[in-house]
Length: 206
Image 1 (spheres, rainbow, N blue to C red):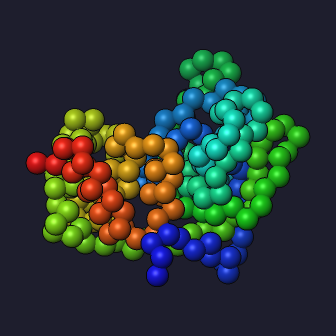
Image 2 (spheres, one colour):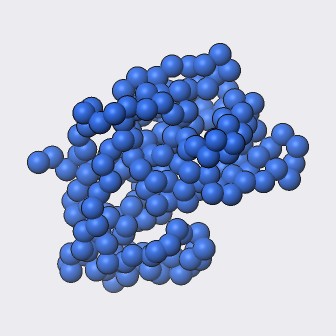
């Protein structure tokens, strides 16, 4: 079976607002965002009021602000975990990636907000980290200690190939297209093998 995900169109679809960004959000990943455009301020307000998430997708063409950007079809659901508005017209939020989704179609609202019809992609089941890739977990542990554990959503599972590969994919200096490939990949062992090869080539493994 291919390491890349299937679209899973047999699942029931749902509507979700989309925030295109110049980054890739992974399940279990935390990300701070500064929101100031009216369409996204309204989106966040509605999400907070109704306790609903929004979707994050990598931008293919365009910018994070202004004209609606073209974006990839596979993204990650984002739950808002913290928010504040210390400056009028600027909202600071922290989001947590939860589950991947695939966009079947989308529309642009009158205010420029993208609303997608999407389906969930089944979460990857925990997978024991292969012994020949323990060096990846050792490097990740050093990165987490350097950045601070508070930056990461607990539990910190260094024995799980899914968790280790997602965290390395979001932390390593990869091209955005490579990060997106890591998100779309549905086999954590293949993902960790690719990341291990990258780290070895860069001379980052002990």
